[in-house]
Image (cartoon, rainbow, N blue to C red; front, side, top):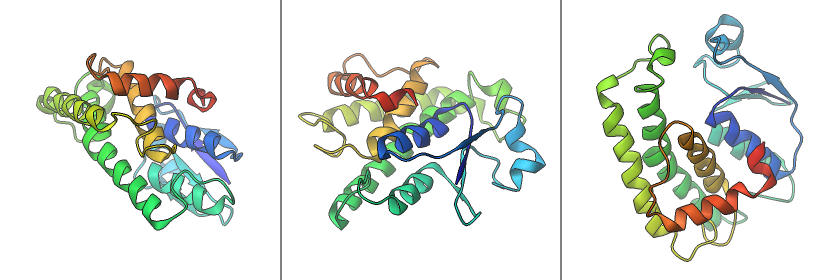
Length: 203
């Protein structure tokens, strides 16, 4: 296997997941800032031109971060970060989807259409006038999630899952682009501190 890796929150999710899963996947760096992910060589791997991408042992490309993580979880015996039972897996996927659609996507696009516009305007369709509104959506949903985290160690209760890893990596990204967790979200801030203390956070 090989992971095409780069800067950014999406590759961070996969790297952190790999560390928590306890597997070893060699990496090849792709220069995102130079736009190498949009050049012909990488487009043969992932025609969407997005990072990261995993080449499995059969030589096939597996793309999209949640899919890569679930694939690695499926082929790794023993530990799981998705769930041991259909109920646990459903719970994990429910939270992953909520976090991805309601927090990660508006946060990332708020950046791409705002501070990151210079980098992204020639690579994707951008909507600069939507930047501020998308950031507000992400902030509102963080406050909602904070209420859901009351009394919980992790997003899904007492077990670490992909949902935690996805959220942590995007909040770490958000902290560097002016989209921090609202100060009154005490549950999320405490959770974020616990996650930051995990060795895998530095992956």
